[in-house]
Image (cartoon, rainbow, N blue to C red; front, top):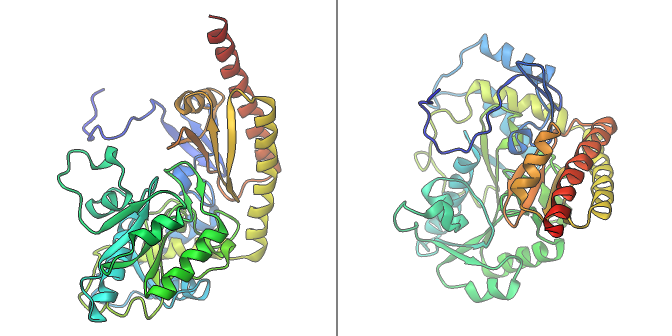
Length: 398
């Protein structure tokens, strides 16, 4: 059957009929362990009863009333995000890219209202991924995503990953701030060290720069803290969230201090569907679960157990897995075989994972997994590695 969709995705020929927790089921009854979570979206897994009820209840009320009027659900969600973080104010969007766009505009506008409109440039890092809009692909700097779309939007100066000297060298009178992901997702699960993040925070303070964090993938409990930057003990000026905040329902959020958002006055930015009642209701339901201290402790504990299993797998199959990276329940396996081969082998064992840069395979399970799911994942990954190990041996013999 010919699809009427743009052919912009290399889709596997699998259709899922239903989901439950970390499991997905096809029409024919095949059962897959979902350690992709829609690329870190399904923070509470599939068909979570609390999220289903929140969305169902919200659907019985007005779905859309325009941002020309107050939306109590959005106001309540914003207040909870503020209470849980460094922020004073929130702007709601519908995706991660939109949230990052808002973050970029907020940083630029801050300097403009302070009398320095020439300060619009942001320092970014190699390996970054900030979205697919024209501004966010320019910020990411990946030629694969830039190709064919004309000259990249000006205003981004990219430096090597975790190279503080390069950051200092990139500083100019036009610099507005630093934009980074505490853990690069698409870039290969590369984790910025706490020491580096602390140095960047201090540099921004000393130079009057804004620290802008993209936590679209690593935020909302994914690392065992509500925000990944909390591991470094730093407070940013602006943060972009999305993915896990909606648990599968489209939502994005730009969080900022009152000072950083001082330029975002009436008319400065907007979104037709941002903060709509349905999205805000589901976002609130996600926070009901994620903000429970016991839940975040559970994520940390499951992360430790999964790491232990992955390290054992690396020891058992050193010709397949070269490195284990990540934090909490956000892991990457740097493989010695093509990562696409690993993802396919895992899928043949009915385990879903995600490709990343630097020849890395991402494991992003729902945050609600328990020990039995980790053991099951370990068994399936072991079988996938054994399958690949046999292939490697055959190639070596040839």
